[in-house]
Image 1 (cartoon, rainbow, N blue to C red):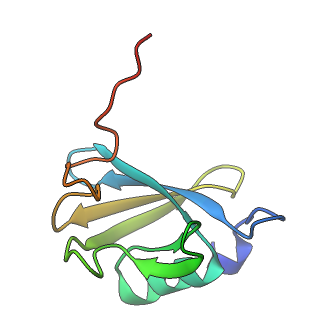
Image 2 (cartoon, rainbow, N blue to C red):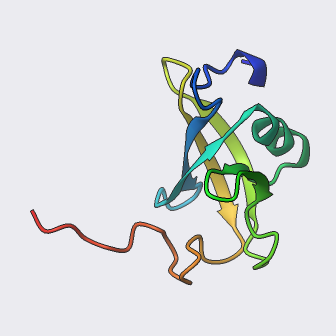
Length: 107
């Protein structure tokens, strides 16, 4: 599949991206990407996303150094969600935690 074939949301132009550690299987984060971010990821081999709050393209780790080398990109069966399998160079979360999913919800 080519990046242009991904089904980006009609209203936002974005697709959700689940980021998973390629060797441990741990889910590291959830982010969003537009077509340009996906193309940059494919071209450079490093995870790029679209920041919904800052409204700009960003490469994970561009400021912290905690880049994510993308080993594989998988597309879900509907073509509207991505899975980046990565080798992280540091913590995924901006708080310094290994994963953004470090809080629990009481059930």
